[in-house]
Image 1: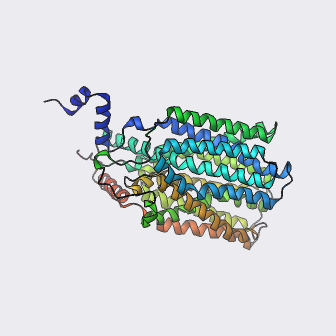
Image 2: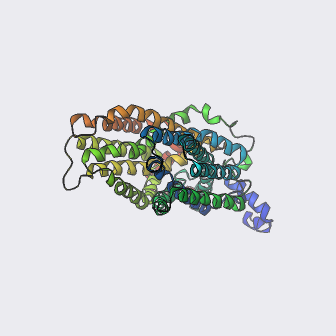
Image 3: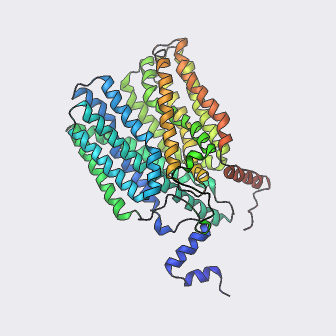
Length: 465
């Protein structure tokens, strides 16, 4: 009697793909983009974005004479449009499909860049900035969803090779770690490209960024599968997965709790833009040191994200998430103590480096793990809206957090006992999240972690299939 492998060899390629999809519980590979395309997309998106947005405020102030209020409204509206629309962008990705959503997102962002190139007054700058934000809200959740499906397939293959029945939850964070690294490379390269292009005018940067997203739209049109999935629903379980619609995530109380606590990570990392300049002024290092500190943060992420992600995969989400938020809490608390005293003359940016180190290390611990856990929450349902809600919750938390922090930062411009106020507030947020976020980890991941612990306690015997 022919073995299953022999039978599969005699099948047509289409039938073989279908059989493999049933065994792995994933959509056929032909309906998924290559991981390399996803990684390249993340890199190029960030290059195009960071070649423009960091210089928007400078252009509005220097070339058009706009005040701080106008600049703040434009930048805030852009961020709110993107983060606030992530939930809707993710839902549209589930409805339209990832390919159409990502192409549409590119076209919308191109429109935003062209509006900014045409802008000569506050109204057009505001409209252009909002449109660029909406473009990001359309393609980013779709990209994350495709990354989740690719990570799920990879983890399933790894589990099969290891001879385990477990679906390999902790292996999912590998691709997300690579996405973080590629994104961070874009954060470094984008401003360098923008600085070079700025010598010929800001419009040149905008047109170059529009050209980048035009190329990406064409690449997605040609190479992104038309039926690319935003779900990992097993083929053989069709009709037996939990009932769902575009807004299933809003009825998942455990996921809402997880998103609320995880949003503290975005509040913490956002302080590199909001709180870090305050600290640099307090220490006397000045705004000129901002680029140096950001470069340090990028190098830290590029060099350490992969090994830290590997350690966190082995540790599991019950350890990785509390550890990451504890590191962020420690970083803010350490800066709070240092803020009381005058900065060291030999290295005035030392407190800022402490802040960046704690924030970055914590983010590296929690971000890839959390992105993988979204698949567990979705439980076979489309994931676009889940990733969108996670991002939108973070955007709302940043608005609320920064509103609460603004008056506290007024106390932190000079070394004094009151200067620790914003940093202790942030440290408390991190500590509370570290203590309670594990209560919202999906039960399937907790069960898998317990299986790993039992497996280790039994001497590492490989379970039989």
